[in-house]
Amino acid sequence: MNYKILFKKMLWIAFFFIAIKSGRCQTPQGLTSNHKRTEFSTQFRFSSVILPASLIGYGFWANHNRMLKELDYEIKEEVDEHIDEKLTIDDFSQYLPAASVYALNFAGIKGKNNLKDRTMILATAYLIMGGSVLGLKSLTKIERPDGSSNTSFPSGHTATAFMGAEFLYQEYKHKSIWYGVAGYAVAAGTGFFRMYNDRHWLSDVIAGAGIGILSTKIAYWLQPTLQSVFFPDRENDSEFSVTTSIAPFYDGNAIGVGAIIRF
View 1 (cartoon, rainbow, N blue to C red):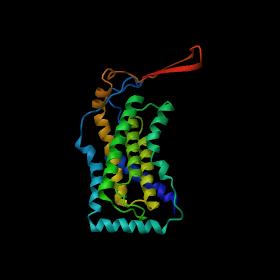
View 2: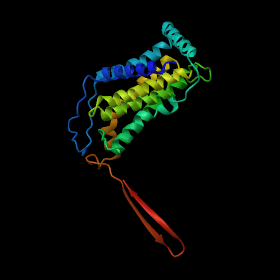
View 3: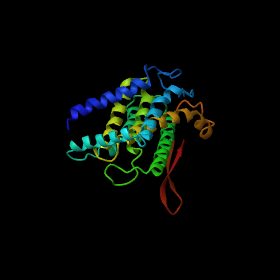
View 4: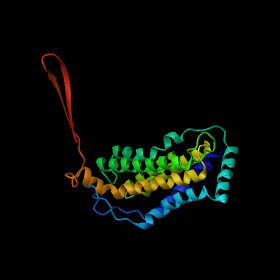
């Protein structure tokens, strides 16, 4: 397999997603350069769900359309002809886009939200994505290309990767569009390797991508509500802080160390 061609295709797919999602990249209003306060956009825009809804719709349609189903089989045959050996890189690459958000913040490149908020967003997105994927797998019972099980639709690995890619894009689009391009390139590569390893059909991967993107979008829309419910007294906190106190103790019989962690 020509991996240079594969790499170029992944970049083009990444550019495709970013170009459709956003024609511009601007700093969110109210977000200051010293990252003192998190701002959320609660406005629902119908245009923002067109892409993920179309991807999910394609996946469902492909399972009931003869022409698209034949396309699944044709791509499987094409991929099988070029397989040298299976590569399990997709087991790890699915988590890379989301992990990059924390790595970049640790490196001093601040994202849109602070630690508490971005973690709540990611957890919400993961719950939505995971619940959707598991529910659809149990309902559709589509056989995998390798015949190992009937849990092919949709691709959970791809959904996880695109969830993380959208998360990375949302957190860093005010910095540079290239963060989003990189995240979507990794996500597209994850989807490709799910087909390369004979674990998913094209329709599974496309639907998984849509579910992942939409899950993250919903998580951002829900964040203000969840914050007011779980952190009602800290809505206006500038930063999420953790205070740790450690002290030794002796009660006459034993010696130890006590720790108090306050969020």
